[in-house]
Length: 43
Image (cartoon, rainbow, N blue to C red; front, side):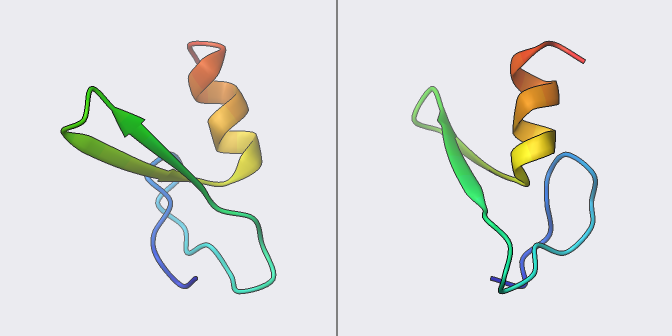
């Protein structure tokens, strides 16, 4: 997609999976799969 990952601040490439996480209907986080796992694990 070319957007910046909110977890690691690196670009999410076109060939990579991007997870969009809606937080309380006010914020959308864009994360790589490994950044999503780290966010869900609290770290």
